[in-house]
Amino acid sequence: MHAASVATNLATGWYHSLIIKSDGSLWAAGDNEFGQLGDGTNQTTNKLEQIVPGGVSAVSAGGGHSLFIKSDGSLWAMGYNAYGQLGDGTTNNSNIPEEIVPSGVIAIAGGDYHSLFLKADGSLWAMGDNLFGQLGDGTDSNVLIPEQIVPSGVTAMSAGITHSLFIKSDGSLWAMGDNSFGEFGDGTINSTNRPRMILASGVTAVAAGAFYSLFLKNDGSLWATGDEWYGGLGDGANGINVYTNIPEEIVQSNVVAIAAGEHHSHFVMSDGSLWAMGANDYGGLGDGKTNNVDRPELIVSNGVVAVVAGFYQDSWFLKSDGSFWATGYGNLGGLGDGFYGILLLPKQIFPPVPPVLSTPTIQSFSYPPPGQTNLVIAATCFQGGRYCLLASTNISLPVGLWTPVRTNSAGFRGKNNFNASLPDPRNSNLPQQFYRLLAQ
Image 1 (cartoon, one colour):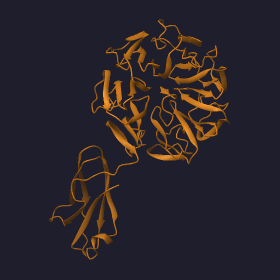
Image 2 (cartoon, helix red, strand yellow; image 1 turned 120 degrees about the horizontal axis):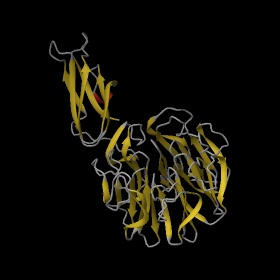
Image 3 (cartoon, rainbow, N blue to C red; image 1 turned 30 degrees about the vertical axis):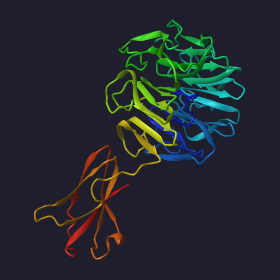
Image 4 (tube, rainbow, N blue to C red; image 1 turned 60 degrees about the vertical axis):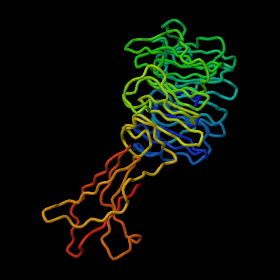
């Protein structure tokens, strides 16, 4: 699902996401059933929370597990571990980061239930689920501690659901695991539990989707092979059990970064523009619609430097100004924006942008007429956010000295009408109350 060679500072898995801020701190949000956020709990959160205060240099998210590298080259892991994908020698989940390798690690890639990493000597290592031979060790047995697969010469890798890809220093592309949908691009649908060379030279980056693969050549061209169910290859084809087992050129030049999710894909051009194709019924492409797209579609015109695509139609990208943006499925809080819901358009997650209201933030209301039991406050916001109603029970103080008491809250996205119905606050000692609508 995730190309560690493309974006090292952000990652997204099944329903959780991780980012590295410029100070090297690691932050996470979303589903935490298996402890994949690494915060010591199993509580889901819809806001980014700090996991490691500094020193993190790279991050990758598997299905229900997370991996990161510290600046000293140590590899750490947390989350789901039923197949040994954490590499700690057990099948026990962990909700705190565990050190797996003390030094020498330079790149990581988390698949659904398996993990890959590279050492500084160019060796490729793997652990976890191996039912389809995706670890490339010649067996179909799961691996609980890191196992060396290739001794040297590997420069980049990516892990999908049941297949893995890597590139060697000579530009050759290699694959192992399941090839039922032609995701290797070798002209067959024959799987393998040993690394198989697909192309002899010219490959610079690779991304493994669920059952398809993307790769870049040194001329900046983007190529795709495998499953085309929702149009994720971007070649104009789509449909159940529609696939190609021969790489197709999708873009001729100027592509600099790629990302493959379950059935949706993104790429970045040299001008900083972000493009997308594939499954979109939960807004994972970020075009404001829910229609699948089988040809590349422009999403952001400039400023994008890195992108990742998650398993269940969520996507993150990083802009040159250091801001992180997200779009798509966030019903388990994986977008980190403080909500549980879906974003059809990209939203800046960090630094957070405060909502803007189109109506004054201070409003005064007299008691409702006899027989009415509620006050209604209405406002319209230009940008989505969470709002709270603050009430004062002492009208003799200047507005700036009000002691606010939260009486209600609600959250919205996009351009919304905000309506809050309050219980009757009548008090025999007070002729009226004052209310403020504030953005959180």
